[in-house]
Image (tube, rainbow, N blue to C red; front, side):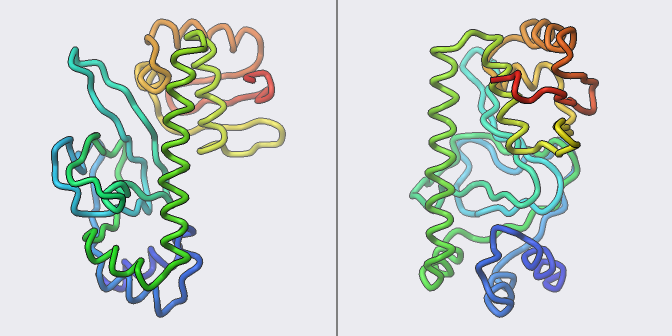
Length: 224
């Protein structure tokens, strides 16, 4: 099992500043989880005692309002970490982390990871930048919710998904996330009906084509 974890860390771009010896040291502290689709990794109020490294699959970070509406903060793909706010002093989770497809996840006790970071300042700096970047993205999304129309939020979301998950095919970009219209609505803080009407309009204009498995953005610049 430890050899498998080392292989995952060796191929984890986020850890490319570490030497092989340092990756071996990190793998000795880690455990591996093979998660099924729709498996919950943690819930709000759970103790923030681990940092997670996503090697394969997708993980959704979300929360629910008092009236039961879901707000999706992020869809994470291979090569990303989550649960990182534990390093910033978070004692209990505030969001839900759940897989949207089968996934392979490595995780490390937060105290052990903090001890590791103490002797690896470059990695510590990367983590700090990551936390700042994600907080900035959340602020940007909140600003869109206040200052953009629902249709504009859907277009902005597509631009974000291109940047985070898009596969380049010539001048086109393909997004393969298996997202339902309701998932996209939850990400854009709008309704499923608005997503459907916006997508239909974009398809009529030749900007996108889509089905349940993928979104092909034919004219990415038209989304901005």
